[in-house]
Length: 143
Image 1 (tube, rainbow, N blue to C red):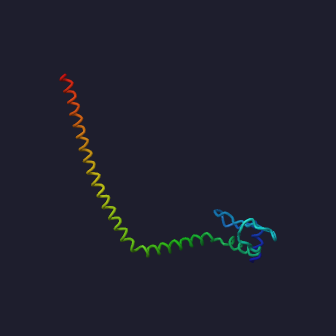
Image 2: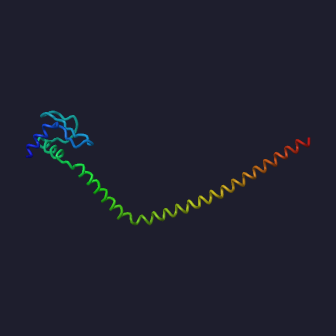
Image 3: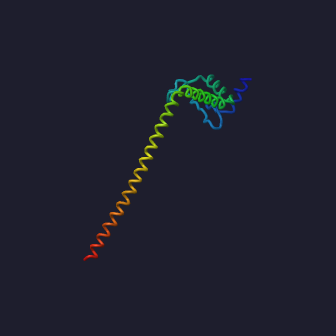
């Protein structure tokens, strides 16, 4: 049965490509002749090994499901690890949040005080300007 599948897969797909699905680009091999220099470094397989790997990968329908489940397992284990290790840091984070809230409250009070000072200075400058303008008009009328 395996030899029949190998024959069919070799006939239907190029020997130098491993096709894993629509969303995954095919893995291509470079066929070298005996004693030919390789154009770059890489892994070299005997033809029988290449065909075995090609058959195994192309015959696995659930390779994407396996990859996703492995990624989920790794993510879950990392989340569990972080949850266990960061239990003490929650207290530090609460202290940091409290410190920032206090600092923001102080800054808001400072801003309110500065706004009041700005309003006072604005009215002082308007009053001074009015006094100067009325003095100039008074002196002009006197002449």
